[in-house]
Amino acid sequence: MERYLRARRVPDVEDVVGETFVNVVRSIDGFEGNETAFRGWVFAIARNRATDERRRLIRHPSAPASIEELDGGGPRGDVENEAMEGLATDRIGRLLDTLTADQRDVLLLRIIGGLTIDQVAAAVGRNAGAVKMLQARGLAAIRREIERGAVTL
Amino acid sequence: MSPSDVPPDEMGLDPNATDDALERMLSGQAPTTDEWPELARFVEDLREAVPARPLASEDLHVAAMVETSHLIADNGDPVVRPVSNADAPAPQVSRLPKLRRKPMKRSTRTLVRVLAPIAAVLTVMGSMAVAGALPHTVQKAVSHTAGIVGLNLPGDDESTDVPGQDDQGENADDQGDNNNQGDSSTKDTAVTTNDQGDQGESSDTQTSADDQGENDDSQGDNNNQGEDTQSGDTSGGDSQSGDTQSGDTSGGGDSQSGDSQSGSGDTQSGDTSGGGDSQGGD
Image 1: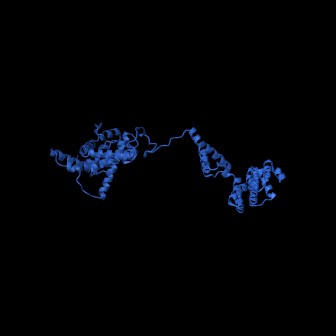
Image 2: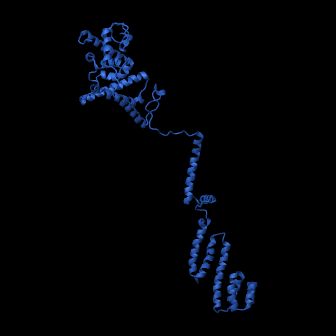
């Protein structure tokens, strides 16, 4: 979940993760389903919290230094590898920016979160067919961008 | 429409591509086909771009979760639901602990239904009995019954509640007024008692006593006459009256002694034998 939130570029991932788990504990009595549904339910809470955090930053803009920047932002040894990783991250980020918000959410939940179609459907509040459609259109858009050469992997 | 419900030409993929191939690629497993090498590389790079890292404040998150669970538990709500209710909606929502009513047994319920009205009636009647508000006969019976137990309730004393006796008292007072017109206060007291008997004309049980009282009254009168006799009258009529009294009651002894002082000893002997003798002696 933390990876999913970082991939969505949520500003304060630690706070959102903490609020997500607190909400999980607070609302767990209303949860119905098995372990598979629970995974999708937790990601739904995390997604909603991330959305709330983004709206909050829009209303009250600020630029605090994140923990990642303070803790792990500096060089860790292999500068070349870190530079390549940074470039790859930038390219990935640009590819994701070509997608719509829903397509990006679906692909991130599927690839980073490791959720199934049904779990993603539960997390984003759509049915399985709609999730499959968003997933296919997102992958097609990425493929087109790669073939067009705008982004080199 | 492909098996994945996506138009085949929209992704530019093989229409025969199965969902399994996509699932394997997206889940990071080895692809079974080389049809989408760009997409497979994108997925791999995406995973590597966001590596898993331990949370810097993981302990704080756990502490926040535990604290939240404690707050929820303090409010009476369960933190977790039993496994038996996991796949089905909970039949009820837990709230603060509360006392649950235990159903009463049928026999006990019937007994309560019978005894409750009886207890209510007894309570009302008991209150009325203490206040003395029951009808006379009922009050008397209740007070008598309570007296057996040791409770003193009004209505147990007959003298206070008999209406006829009350009337006598009132008449006695009236008689007292009449007696006040008499000669002396000491005699008034005696006459008052006797005159109560006179007023007992309405009472059947005291008829004989009343008659005696009348005689007593007459004796008193005669006594008064006897006093007059002692004052100096020596007439035979006085002695006759004193003789008559001696024959009736012992109280006439006073007058006889007076008579004997003023009259002859024959009169006394005649008194002993009877009124007729004394008159003959005169």
